[in-house]
Length: 233
Image 1 (spheres, rainbow, N blue to C red):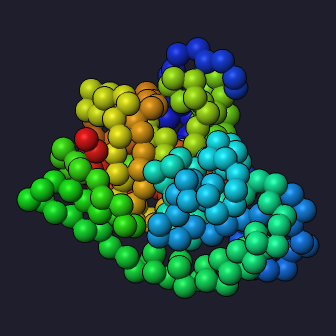
Image 2 (image 1 turned 120 degrees about the vertical axis):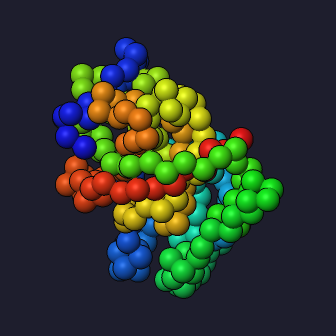
């Protein structure tokens, strides 16, 4: 959002990789250092580590904007330093199936079990304490939206997918939520995990501001949307 949504925060030390389209991958030059893996329904950093033979930390460091809980089918993940034939074959296979995977994500739906307070999204089950509806806006890493401390949250951590600004009197800082009901190409479809790690002067009551990686103009297309938050236990 605009300057009115500039966030207040503690002084922090330290002030995404661009998403690569499938068509670009198919027509690009051979990968020299890194490869791209299109996530499936059961993909985790652990399974990628075992498949490619590199550490979980290396893969996570190559994907700083993606937390472990926000890996969803169709997501492009960077695999650092992989040039083996095995990796090349895996890349070709995952690219060819990406279109089908994306289609399944779009048509997928949440499975909510109110009796047990559980919700399932993209094959993962979460226990929740309650569900609240909030009015959501979105913000980017632009300086005009983040003030003198730059693109960091209230605690000084770099902004990333899964960061949301809240009113702490409604949603305490540190709360983990599953966000649903949103629509924007810069966000995971259907649902994504987020942490209430930021706040802003304009975020009062049942309001949240969602950080979305990308240009200020593309993020502004989010506008205002009513979304549901499953408060994860």
